[in-house]
Figure 1 (cartoon, rainbow, N blue to C red):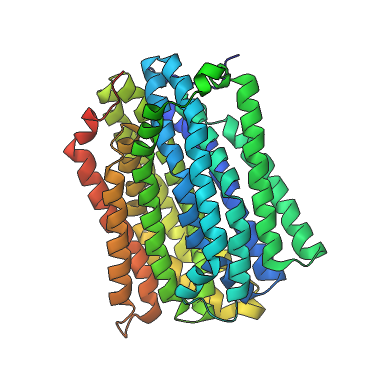
Figure 2 (cartoon, helix red, strand yellow):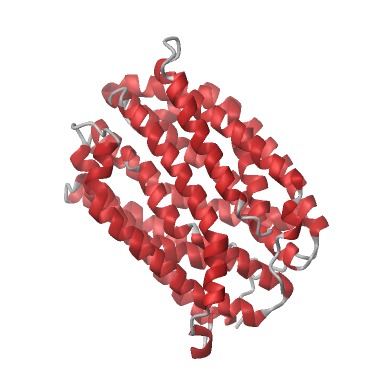
Length: 452
C-alpha cells in the first residue's frame, strides 16, 4: 500500500515543492525542540538556575553523541532519494533493509561510550562543582535514548527521501505531548529533578521511533521487506557509511567546537552559563526554519540529481536563498526589541534578573548574523542531496577552527570579555556560510550522483 504523502519532486514547481515539503518539517522540528524548551523551562522554574546550567552543560555533548549515530541517517536518506528519483524500487528496498544494520551498530557503540565516560568528559570540560553531579546523571540517562533517536531519524530520513515530510510530523507531535506530560509528572509529582527531565525525553523518543517503524511497515510498500531484502549487502552498507560518515563527523566536529566553547563559558560562572543556555535554546528554535528548509532541499536535490535534472537543483537553491533572506530580516527586530521578554520565559526575574539581562544582550549580538546561519544550511543541503557529502568534513573543520580561534581570542579582549562568546557564535556562522557557498558555486556536486 503506497502512502498518499509520497511526492515525486522531479516534476512540477520547485518553490511549491520546497515550501510544501518544508512546512511539515518545520512544525515537526519545532515540536522536537519543544523537548529542550520544556526541559529548560521546567528545570529553570521548578528546580533551580544551577540545575538549568547543569542541563545546558550537556547540550553540546548530547549533540555530539546523537550526531555520531543519527548523522548516518543523512547518508541513508541520500541513497534512498536518488534511487527513488531514478525509479529503482529494488535498490530502494535494499537501502531501507541495510539501514537497520547501520543505525543499530552505530547507536549501540555511542550509547556505551556515553554511559562509561560521562564523568571524565564533563570534568574535562571544567563543569562547575555546584552542578557537575546533575550534569553527569542527566547525560547518562539521555545516552540511553540514543538508539531511539537514531532509529526515528533513520525512518524519518527514508520518509523524506520518498517525498513524505508529513508522516514523521505526526509521531513527533505524539512524542512531544508525552514529553511535556512526563516532564511535569517526574519533576513536580516525583521531585526527580534533572534525571526526571532526561527520563521523560528518552521515553518520548522511544515512542516516536517505535510508532514510526510500525506505521512504515504497515502502510508503505517499500518498507515491506522480504528475507532476501534483509540479507546484508555490504556494498550498500559501505555506501551508507561513505555518504553518512562525513555528515556524522561534520556534526561531531561542530559539537566538539561547541563543547570547547562551553568550557570557555563555564569559566565565567553560573550566570553567564545560564544565559548561554537560554540564548542557545532560543537560537535552536531560530535554526528550525533553516534546518527544515535544508532537509527539504536535501530530498529535493537527491531526487532531481538521481533523475539527472541539474537545472532544477540550481533553481531550488536560488528559491531557498530568498526564503532564508526573508526569514532572517523578520527575526532581527524581534530579538532586538523583545529579547528580554523572551529570555524571561525561562527563569523568573526575581530569581535571575542578571541572567535575563545577559541573555537579552546576547541575542542582540547574534541576531545580525542569522542570514549567515541560514546560508550554511542551504548550500550544505544541496551538496548532501547530490552526494557531495565529503564536503561535510571541510564544513565541520571550518566551524571547529572558527569557534575555537574566535573564542580564545575575543574573550581575552578586556573590552569584550564574556561577550566574546556570542561574537564567536556570529562570526563562526558568517565564515562557515562563505565556505559553503563557495563549495556550491564550485560545481563539483553536479558529478556526485550514484550510478544507477
